[in-house]
Length: 453
Ligand code: NDP
Ligand code: 2IT
Image (cartoon, rainbow, N blue to C red):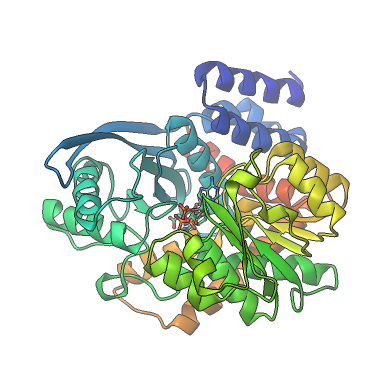
């Protein structure tokens, strides 16, 4: 069977066995197609059925989460943990709490995580989890009730050498604290079973900042390769959560000008540059809408989602040299890509997971826009999670500067690996292909070494 036929066979099997899981199918299609050069060079992957084995999670856990709201009513949500691949280390990946969460979304995120984690060069396997629980508008007591109920089932599947969850959309330090407390209470173990923990109870300095910082370090690596720099560049950023905020902070530290941020209701365009402290006060501390930012900074423009009914994103209509999609999947469409190119955008760097639609990725590539693929560009978060695991295991504590220096080095190495792998396999300059192939190779070779498990 030709390599193309092998890939198409596995994709057809995936589509047939996971009906309706459109995001998962999108992720597998992107990865598998990009693996063609390595499959053509080495027939062991076909011989050992690696693709067939890779697209099926090792374990999928789906459970009911009953919790009591402030009115004493029992509410029901669905919890997920997909333990996708442990060939190179314990399952590692975040938990997402958002009403849109379903099995297809968790599987897409878990699948991506396999290659991302491999690319960091660290020993972490791929997993992801979450719930369709909506944290918006819930009291602190309700959040705690939910997190405890979620952990009442999850605890039996995780552990510091087994599966180590962390944050993602809707899950930050507060939620991880409630889950960690419950894990400790049930198991009696104070261990590094979650990352993104608070600094007083086992967390690592710089984990909060790591994804956003790492994303900007990655962008700088790309630009440097082409004799350019982020310094002085006007940048658009979408989202206003953990990744977006620390992307904006690092852009300022590197003398760039971030002019936008967004949430699910609208976009802020602040031509002179986003006011970081106002943004943190509104979103990170206040957990409010960006309409509050507009009140604090009346010279900023607020563009509600209703003005862009197609996909709700005004962000990509704002002229920029570098774009940092940092909110959610499929938030940058082909129409957005065309607008970005028309406005002279030079680089799209993915802070979120799979934020750019496949047709938009193809368009950007055809137009020569530099592209930092999510698996590489946002890997700084999970890499620093592994640094947290290292500190927990050795009962040590590193300074912010030490962790940041390691993050810097890891992002450089991820860039070099992606770039050099693309060259080696004849996909010159295509960091998406390079990242996928490099991430795949380490996992696939380990699967072969470990036999039929
Ligand atoms: P947060 O929950 O902290 O923030 C998410 C932000 O995105 C919020 O501002 C939210 O708006 C906004 N958002 C969500 N959905 C939409 C939408 N449909 N349209 C517009 N805005 C939206 O999550 P994170 O910052 O942690 O995660 C953002 C992305 O980065 C995700 O794709 C995640 O998977 C990825 N990522 C996160 C890592 C981490 O370490 N946290 C690591 C690597 C990747 P609102 O405030 O209205 O809800
Ligand atoms: O998508 C991601 O890489 C994350 N949400 C972070 C995962 C982690 O384990 O830190």
